[in-house]
Image (cartoon, rainbow, N blue to C red; front, side, top):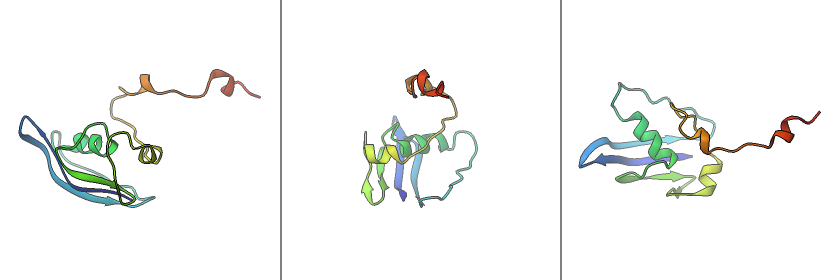
Length: 100
């Protein structure tokens, strides 16, 4: 289970996300809707570990998640709105795809 508890992100003291809490169970899909500028992308970036929350915590299977948690990263799928990460990703070598 992925749990957000009181997530808050401030930039120069101004809250972009304030006190967001949710539970997502294994196999469950969560829709996170709102107008532009409402903090959706910022919340997802905190949940995926791309940015640190200013307050609150993220729990994965009851354990607190913080920068570089390998167990958490192996169990998370994320497709960003813009493909900035793609140049940092690796895949199987060409030989893998050319096998009969």
